[in-house]
Length: 452
Image (cartoon, rainbow, N blue to C red; front, side, top):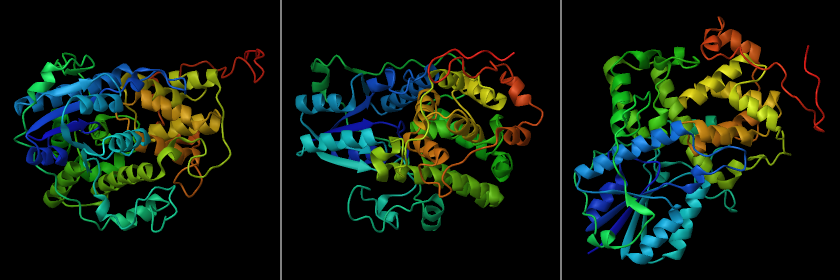
């Protein structure tokens, strides 16, 4: 009797899920595990407080959905309150697990966890699938050897434009159908005393949510969006600061993994076949390619994604001003458009792509704060937080990442004139209400006289 373990992460779905299909073929008994990492419940080194309540609610609804899907297949979702290495090590020591199935994750910590477990348990077969990306590594016309190795040619292109030109001609595989069978849960698991690993208790959300996690919510948004003519006008409205129909809104489910990029590409292709392709429909794929680039970017550069000098190893730019940072987080800066975006983020867990660029530019270039504090705050707040896209984009704005122009500084007055000329967005989110005094103390902690 072969016993397998499926290790869920940012892939909370049963459709287009190769690791489940493979497990169904190879093992006789199966454990489905999600590790609710304790690090997301604790303050970080960047003065943030762990996962926000909105992000937690979205995650919980995704776990509810996955647990319900597995229950229909006579399976159980087990959730551990310990970190992944400790949880899986415990199970491997207590049970005769011979196969572990998971998807490749681009995050440095996740990759290190996998390496550590594979090193400790060399007799276990680790099956690494690629369910979070459009392409398999074997399809890519370059190698993805670690940036720390000597053999770096041909390697990941140094800019998105170069990457896009190489991968655009590649074929994207069709998504795989939802699994219809999974092996049973081993009886031995129920007999062990494992206080930190428990079956997930399904508690459907009673509160109405703008974003409901899980496959059902993901498929509803996918179907709703492509059942309209909105994709044909996407590029015209994609930079709007607000409005449900002005963007696809796929990113929360993509980040959670309850929706795969291949599912989006398949729906997009079907839409183009029925309604015709144009610049707007292409732009949806263009942005999927940006996400793809950052996934392989994070995989390739590893811990450099989190260094203040990024890929450039530039001298540290910006510092940490507690008062300025807190005012930026709370939407209480001298810049109304920034304030409106930040208040929107705190109340909804979401912000438009244009808004993210504006507030990031403000933090880095106007407030002179180390960009990593902003990236960490986004990690706390965003329901569509994705380690690669988030930290990669922040590096891009700060000029220490993949931008050949060396960073992006936005003129906040011009951005306001262009994207909120009537200040309706600012008024909606009360961005015009703020403390005009940015600093109350100087660099030596001496009080600064308030403005008259």
